[in-house]
Amino acid sequence: MANTGQSRQGNGQGSPLYNPSDDYRREELIRLLERSIERLTLQELEALYYDMSTKNYINDGY
Image (cartoon, rainbow, N blue to C red; front, side, top):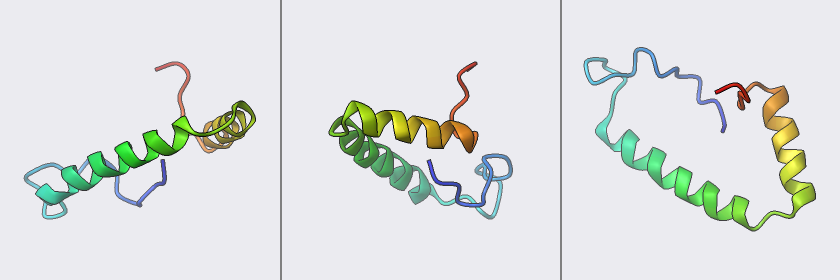
């Protein structure tokens, strides 16, 4: 997932950065990404996985 420059910390409801429509937009983007990812080939998925893991967007350790 792309980094927007805002961390989850400090973006809570008490923060001036919080916007209730952010939650809706986040869910909308997740649905769009899921549909797009489902259409990728195995080779494309592996390339995406490699790219995301090298940028630390994926943590295999959960």
